[in-house]
Image (cartoon, rainbow, N blue to C red; front, side, top):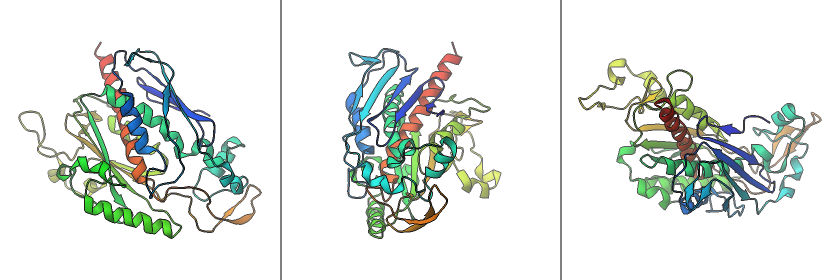
Length: 354
């Protein structure tokens, strides 16, 4: 299986399956001398881990990360950083009913089509549990980006859309509620929506907004490796993501150029930021902001028609422990992937100026 490495200068290669012995990864290209706060890394893992509230899967995992190389006396050494997270609470029997059956909208059938053999326990490598390794790498990338602040939050659940401009929000409220929405009234409504959906044996999607502040001008390559293109690839590589837009996004297609253009001020900043902090694929020093759309979780506790490996039409119903909405746990994953992109481009910019 190819495609397990992300980045060019600052890279992470992940390994492991949902019900295997462990998950982990190797981070390469991290400069020496970066002070590493291990508690901050574990805190981000805790924000992603299952079982943290009543609106997420009740799988119980401590998601404790252990580092094996690349960090000495609290600082990076410049050598590859190896780490591992042991799986502690697998219930593989919950998946025995899908050994030869393809779940609707899952990767089951396409994995069989491509590889001819798959780990059906929890989806194996296709499981979102793989993202725990990304969070570790992203947490280290955040510490490399000491002057950059990456903040993500839930901006919608189903048809509940909190569309206030991010400048009007209090980011300190994000971690004060289960859905990680900085608007308290919306957070309560979103939580109730998820609870009601779970009682119906169903799932629901939503969106996450991410704001990156303090990004210096000049990051990104102007042709195939545009900064927004790499951010889009990063977000679309996350399980269940169906869409990405930055700056004015799709709404910009409904505007006239005279309304959409970001006019410069004498200090080099712009009056507006429809560009989302990126012009010509290169950061311009303004805030970068984007939105990521997540589909409803494919596993639902309702009977659905599907086929098995023999091509027979069968009925199946989800079993086990699953998220009714992935959005609250995915907030930190979006932050992690954004940090990986920024760290990679920061190091590429430094290299190009040597």
